[in-house]
Length: 331
Image (cartoon, rainbow, N blue to C red):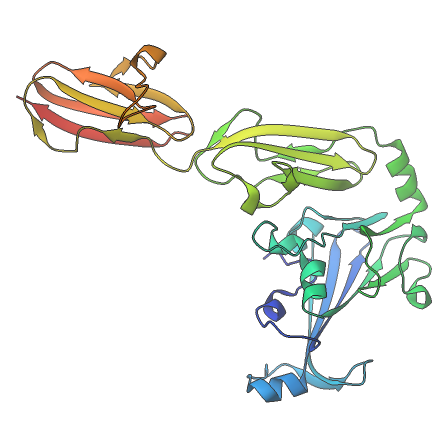
């Protein structure tokens, strides 16, 4: 099942407009622990007519509570929370709902799938979220009081704090008793990766904050090289993992593939993150300070020399497993 953005705003945010959109979501936790998400999205008839946009054949024209006519569409899906909500900022189960609101609207540093509320505010989109847990809610900061009672809590963008939350009595007990740090999975401490790892976060109760390199967690904030990712739960228990990404293969200079050279031949090797191994005809070459070039054109490259005539194969490998291979002939 395809993962959904938290408030299903992707299609709307492709159209940069002001005050012409509304989004409603209802999250219901079922008896078996699965989640049913009903999303209703609307765009004003006035905006659609003005822009000459195509109306979805499944859309319904109706008047919403602000008195304007909207083309609306409703979609319902049922699955696990992990399948339906693709955001580390959201926790929902039978007893706990928690959404850390990221109001940083800098799209260059924040992952859009964890930024729906910020995008909604910036584009004057009204968003309403209704949450139904498995038992009566005893603690919530839901602002729509007239719609909040029993198992239901309702929020909208007329109230923006650092989070929206709702807990049952059991949920509050679980949170109070949580002394276990969050789990950061799909990435190992000290490991190297040649592609961006699909990092996942989990906790016994609520992962309240996730960061990467000191910024709000987003794949956009993963750097080529050293990365430090931290997850902190609602009680302050914290886990940190340090990993390295190396997306480019090592560079070999001074020689070119399939070329013929005469006499003693020198080549230079460098990697942007961490050079792991250099082999010449299958024999491992030493990577040591004494053959590191200190100045000039090849500064910070490792220098190697081939004296023997014949065909040679040079392979340079970095910590993430990226390889560069060159074959030459010396006569």
